Image (cartoon, rainbow, N blue to C red; front, top):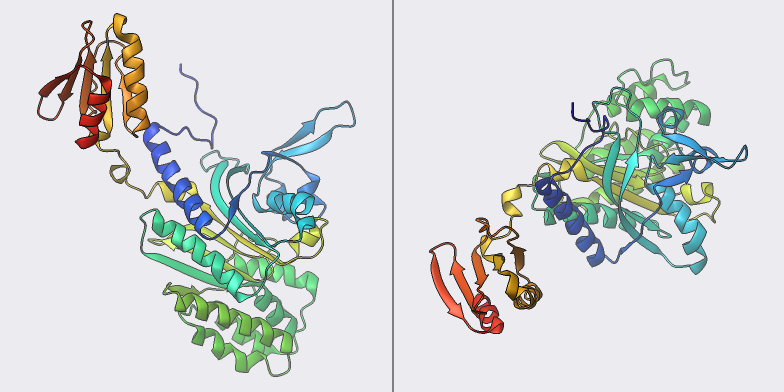
Length: 411
């Protein structure tokens, strides 16, 4: 019986890797255009990175892969990283914050979350970007733009953005007299989209509670939708007014970019440490990424307080939407090379020359012709090069390798 792969994990075939790399390269190329620099963090991190600062919920912590990094009884407990942003924040605090510059960082990495049935993915690959040391609506809009432009470069369209705002939700809850500890529970239920999120709330403003229930069950398509909230909650609460104005500004910037967006306060599930704007990115109604602002995370990591925001794009969901046909190389870019034993030196030199021009050279190890190639070059024992166009079977002979290169270059 063949040995099965580990549940919740995936092998990637050559075609699947083509799609994976196309997502990765489109993201990294666009990140470079925006001034972001690639970094990489370890697969293993200390467990206390995720527990001491309270950056992950208890529900998430119960799903991490953890074990002792053995050193007698003094071994530290380590985890396969369940999150990509927190290790980047640690890297920033460890090595970058002392430089005093705004950090524009990007990465491609995997993370691991236990899923007991094994039917869902346990290893998750993502592209991510973090903007640390710069706050404000323009910074948020830059990240949303980078995410959208990366997806467009992958050849995907029909993009939609769903926006929420943790700071605004907390401000509205505080305006009802709800304390911080109770806010956490209500906020989690709101972001999870629970219809009864407000049940049991004790407030001296029952009418405002009813308005909030209506608000969080309504979706809007413009900044005007959020502006309608302002008259209801901001007269005596400048903090709510500030969060509302910030949210409206971000929506207006996104709209000015020509990006379709929808206000959906229930679209932030899983964003445990976010403090401001939250966005989710959809392609053909499939959630392919998301992110937001987390201004408290750097300080929670032990660094000096710094504004920060970021996002992740989910490679598996994006790559599955990309057609391999659009990625396949033309057969004319592939050359099948046949070499007889006494012409190995000539064959090696020709293969090197052709590869330097950007062609793919597949050496025939068993004398066969590779049908997925556009050309075949056979080097005979008489030190002659026979070039065959595999599309029309036309043959030409050459005495010098450089002439073969020139002919293929012209064609």
